[in-house]
Amino acid sequence: LKFVVIVANGQHFPYPWTMAKVCIFSAEAYSRRSFAPLVEAFECQLIPEACSPSTAPLCRGYDVACLFMSDDCTREVVKIFKECGVKLIALRCHQSDRVDREACAEFGIPIVNVPKYSEHAIAEQALALAMCLNRRIHRAYNRVREGNFTLNGLIGMDFYGRTCGIVGTGRIGMAAARIFKGLGMTVLAYDPVPKADFTDVVTYVRFEELLAKSDVISLHCKLTNTTRHMISAGALNKMKKGVILVNVSRGGLIHVPSLMKFIQTGHIGAAGLDVYEEEPDYPLYTHDLSIMQDDERMKHWDEQYAKLRALPNVLCTPNSAFLTHEACEDISAITVQSIREMESSKPLTNALKLTF
Image 1 (cartoon, rainbow, N blue to C red):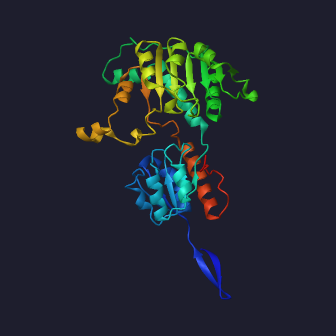
Image 2 (tube, rainbow, N blue to C red):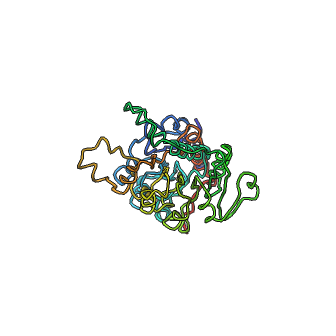
């Protein structure tokens, strides 16, 4: 037991220091193993439901609201946090799209995120999607389950000797480039700020040249005003016919209606998507629609996404590219570090800017 000493009227009163109390939202079963470091370090309340105006009051009396990428952190929620005594918002993810930073600044609640975790997890998902689509593994699996052992429509290509285009060469893009290079592919890359020490792995080219020459294109960019819809009709039209397009980065990089059109015409060979543009505004991936009654399910229906998923050469996963034991352990360790810094009044290493 730790103590702080309060001096009053010349007397010293030892006061027991209690560990930080952390309210963890979206604490679903799959992630609970990774919460062990948090539970061991702090007094934790695990809430399976996502954070929203209706669930935010559950953090009353807790020092930290620990949120995941699908949790709401609107002004209404931030105000509730303030009323409940929350001193820190700790995001168990990198993106902060759903956080109202102006409200956090107004109510004086700092935010920390997890700026990096296993880049290999996400890069390997990009490879998995590309390989699965190329060899039609998902379609072959379904056929064999139904007793259909025919081979028509399952032909793919050797990746060896082909060209892969990596858009964005941050940590994840570099990890993906090394993986595709290891398959014997020529790897082209586009980045506004090329890395001079990475030219032994990739050849940097103009964006248009990458689109025209690549058999596989994998996106690894941040979503900004410049990159939003960077893959739209114009870019899709410049791609090689039959290209496999993979996005494990941000949904808004791709203009979905244009992608669907180019897939249906046969110009785009396949698309592997771990993210979807409408996801930040509606936490689609946190719902199990299959167990809902029809009237409730239709409230959550996204016609565009349903049509996209129905295309036979499109493979969608539920924003799970990060989901490995190693990545989850990284996330927990960095979150523990941030809360420890708050406890000891140290500068928050991973604090997000609250003013723009």
